[in-house]
Length: 182
Image (cartoon, rainbow, N blue to C red; front, side):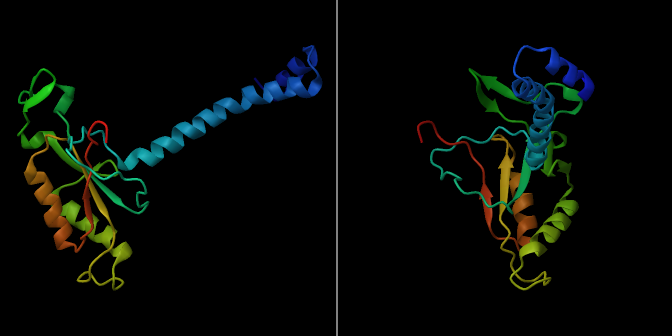
């Protein structure tokens, strides 16, 4: 609908002019608002991957997350969208996790990283908040949150912790699912 058609529609209605115009403007603005929300939400969630967080017995709520915190995601992706042959569930509870190395991905902002790329990326991210500017031997205050599937192998956590240690990032957090009733 273009502006001329909207104007004709407003003049044909039995509503007062301002009300008819207001209704038409709402119909014109709603799709734009919807698209804005859709794109802004997607952009904000690019640093998060779909992971099934580990369930914790106790946890501290993340009420005031640091907006500069770096998210490192570990998630399980089976090639070609097939089912994983190693995962076993009984009554909805995981009894055998996947140990196939090719099924696990380490990602930052949706980009899959090798061990070397992870270290390089953490070095760059850590430089944004070093105690001594641009000195890679000084500690970085940049927080890092590890978000991983609950059944992720420990070796992947170790890879990320080692990379953080090499790049002098010390503020590490691990995301978990809050216990029921917490």
